Amino acid sequence: MADILDIQGLSKRYGAVLALDQLSIKVPQGSIYGLLGPNGSGKTTTLGIVLDVINASAGTYRWFGQPISKATKRRIGALLETPNFYPYLTGEENLRITADVKRVDHSRIPAVLQTVGLAARKANKFKGYSLGMKQRLAIGAALLGDPEVLVLDEPTNGLDPEGIAEVRGLIMDIAAQGKTIILASHLLDEVEKVCTHMAVLRNGKLKAEGPVSSIMATNDLVFISGGAPL
Ligand code: ATP
Image (cartoon, rainbow, N blue to C red; front, top):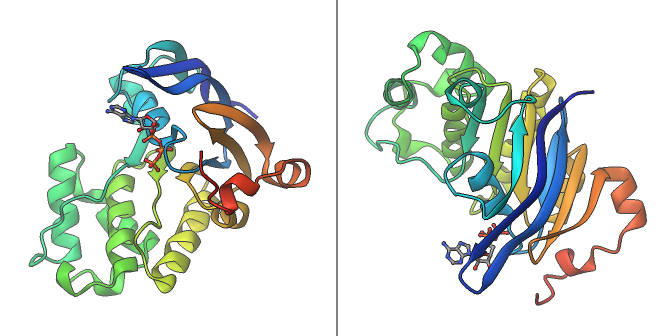
């Protein structure tokens, strides 16, 4: 299968801190690709660079075989931090505002509400949503432009167990619709349950990459599950 994202030799230095050290990974089309590593391992820096919001110190990346451009960005949906939805507006009204900000038309809003399981609650005010519903709406906002790939940074952080289950289920539903998903997480069990492929990062370096089953079988990932100090 073709690679959706091909990262070659990516490095990022913040003063004395080498946040990313020659990272090379390939995200296969149709995968749910977990970027797994403890806090500070470079996951957010990697996503920031490939989404063109952080400058790399060295290295290259290509989306769909091409350098990043306005056209490639339209094919990528991203949720890096929780959007500021309006609490007293409904879920649907919030999506309309997001669509206007992103300059995409409103035609996909019903389908997005359906995908994220909020069609029946679209007329309810955002402030009454559960944590899981709020996060599902945020994922819906990232889907408004009908992207081919969805990039999510720690999408279950801060959720209750019910919300975590809802969001993980939603990620798998979206992948089943044919979209590629890139998911940064510090949780080994999340990546194991949800992802098909994974890269393991530690101190900005790639430790392992491949299908989840083969990585789990051949690597000692105790530094992640145990939360051992870096
Ligand atoms: P987290 O889950 O905590 O966000 P992460 O794996 O996403 O962790 P990054 O946020 O990419 O890791 O951080 C990688 C390293 O770069 C860390 O040592 C962090 O302190 C450092 N770092 C990140 N952003 C900056 C910045 N703007 N200035 C200086 N250092 C930074």
